[in-house]
Amino acid sequence: MLGLIQWLPDRRVNQSLSDAGIVFPSFNVLGEKLQSCSAEPLTGWFRDGCCNTDRSDRGLHTVCCLVTDEFLEFARQQGNDLITPAPEFNFPGLKAGDRWCVCAQTWQDATEAGVACPIVLEATHEETLQIVSLETLEQHTD
Image (cartoon, rainbow, N blue to C red; front, side, top):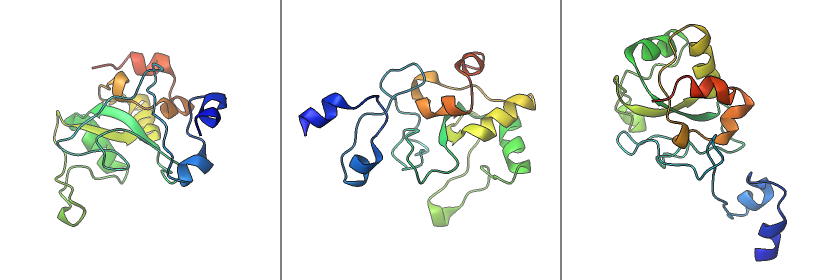
């Protein structure tokens, strides 16, 4: 197995290996090891505290945000209510100041609407760069 890992052409998870339960480290937009976004409230597509992603994450929940009231209201207007608690999903609801992994496109849309919240580059997954430029992300760092 070690030989297989050494020849992988890039850092992205090889999906067939991932499907087999073999997981490689995730990287952030800076090319470094992905850092935790939040354990309280527990965030992430996998609810592991990190903005990790895989093929099943169609929303690409990869941007670690420090949410603001303006951003939360924008997301609600777009049909994504992050404010209202949903106990059936163990979701406490968010308030300004919480860190949360949000969809890259939602964050990009918020940027274009002038309500983007600050982000944490070290905890923002590299897959975000499919949608948002590093330059734009750097303009909104926490």
